[in-house]
Length: 198
Image (cartoon, rainbow, N blue to C red; front, side, top):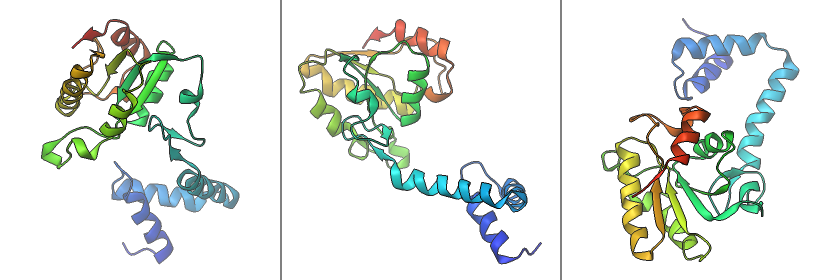
């Protein structure tokens, strides 16, 4: 079916999003067509604001609208514990459980030779720089419990061991092959509470 160019462009734009195929993109485009104009303008402004106003924290790498982020700026947090995660969504998942009160470090990925992602492609150098701070006594390697996450955790552990900082991994409870962001709060809470030294 041939659509007018504006709707075709909108369908193509929706198909660039992950998990959106042609039928869903078409359904979303026609939904937008039937929305009130002020709602469409508000939606488009939100998209632009996300790109223009958000940045990565210069300390931990978490997404923020102020630098440093609210977690790094919070003086009440335990500065002796640093939780290393793969993605900013993992920080949000950890914060939902309201049990962990330490700091974070976001890697923005995991080592995956099959995908051409090496240690130099993720946020490891700034992690090592942060570990020069004598306050940090423990690093929790909370990468995803899959092959890439395990590989990344083992690589980082080998770098940290000579420094003498304790490294731990979240305990059982997180499913193998899953992503941290999809775990429920209870599972995450138990995994962090029962973490083990590597």
